[in-house]
Image (cartoon, rainbow over all chains, first blue to last red):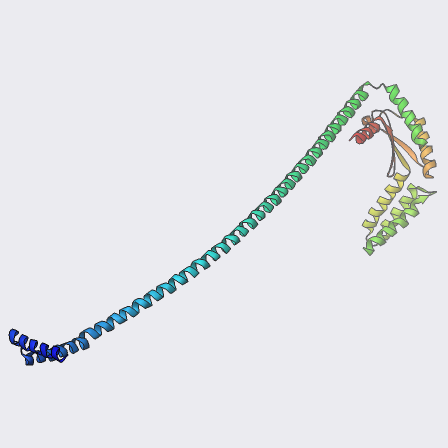
Length: 178
Length: 131
């Protein structure tokens, strides 16, 4: 080991000499590099890392939020599906009820219309019957009037005086015995 | 209203005073009129009107108006007078008028009662039955 170190030392000594290295410069460079590294770490890398961490955290939060949103979306979709299903059932029920109501209303209106039509028909028949009876009565009255008028005129002209006298005597007897 | 009642009562009294054997007597009517003219009871004009109305009704009670399409013989009038007097239990005199509208037959009116046996009446009854 010692031989190796010595060899290395010898080698290094050789190298230093070969390449013209200056230990002091190297140490200064090391110190400068360290200072630079510290400054860079303190004022450049650390904020960058902090920013990266923050971004990473935000990304993770975003992913978590996305997962939550996905979950919520799934739940919402599920709820929406249930609501839609429920709404569909309710709509179907409403449609069924509306159809039944409409059918019942239609039947009721049909019955009412039929009843009204029947009433109108009955009234019309009644009115026609009354009109017919009235017309028949008028005709009968007119015929009776004409018959009586004609008979009166004929009898007034054609009935002989002796017949009128006989009728008067007969009437006198009849009225005297009333 | 009470005054009208008094007028009617007074007219009835005058009417009763005007009757003789159940018939209106001309002489008694004259006496009643003379009495009214002299005494002039309260509202005598209204009393006279009521008295006249009662006398007319009373006279009508004793008259049978006989309407006929032809001339009615005295025999028929006498028969009618007799029959109506018997029916109403008072003396009724028949008076005849001609009414060609009856065509044939008679119509007798005593007061408000009407008896009819005529062709016109029968035709009218026939028309009313058919009507």
